[in-house]
Image: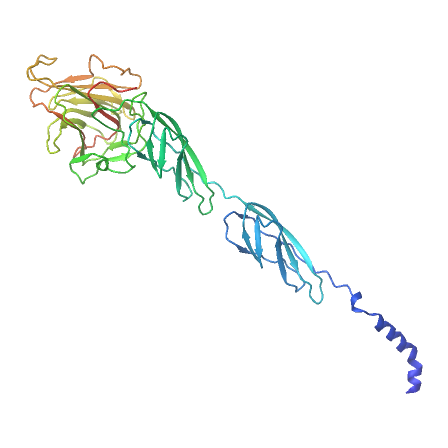
Length: 431
């Protein structure tokens, strides 16, 4: 044994030196192979999300940091979006028994939400003294709520969706839609023009009610077929050069069979009453001898109507029509033809003739009715000396004007749109 130890002593000495020289501080750990680290872009308002660690041949756990906490913060592996911009997310892998620590980075981008697609926004012109009216929200692919502001409080103020006219001028009305779901906030503007048009001294209606609402919710009274096909407010309103009521509200659709409505006013016992309005007729269904407008006595139950305005499709040219007019029973038609789809200004005049006075036809105490039709090129600043149709009905009793009526026939709709109704005791149609 001694001889063996003596024989291999040099080898043992060498092994001892090798073992003594292997200090663990001198061993270099392996570098792990870390795969690609990505963080998908997000939009502001997105929910917190969990990071997916990159692949690695090391078993070390990952931790994460954000270079810009104003864009995103990280708790554990959960990212919370704070603002718009870019931040560098660093994935730090701890060392394990074989591999050293390592890092990988990814740029995380937070973008703004896309704006909504907002449709046209319009606000009808108004006159000083007009009643407060409701704004109609534009169409949008976002479900965000709309709010409204007026740029000029001296012209109009807004509370919720209600606009109150204050004075003459213009104001920019801004409709702002709140951010909703995957859409950012958006806005659209419209110009409100308030003019100094004269206000009717007897009655007027620019049909400012909510779109789809019945006229009976805006001061009109149903006097026939109350529950059948109510006359509704529609949009847009009608336009006509310089007429006081053009584009100042919505319109009324007299386009069905059923309900007839009355707008009452204080009875006029003497002088002259003028009713003016815009009308636009549609060819289908055919309109044959159906009156849609007239004066009446104030009592809702009274059935005496005078100054009836009709639409009659021309038999030889169905693409055009004639206006008809009747004091009551006697009916006359215009000689000119008119176009469907075109807006005309209509004025109905009812002149009260005293019992002891002869009218323009030489008849004692007989009231007179006159119809005036104007197209967009007409001069209607002053009353023409000759009406389009002038008529009296000696076979029917006169009325005391106290309301105007819109009528839908029971069998055949007149199919017209009415706007800018004005009842006055003078010829006063424009500013």
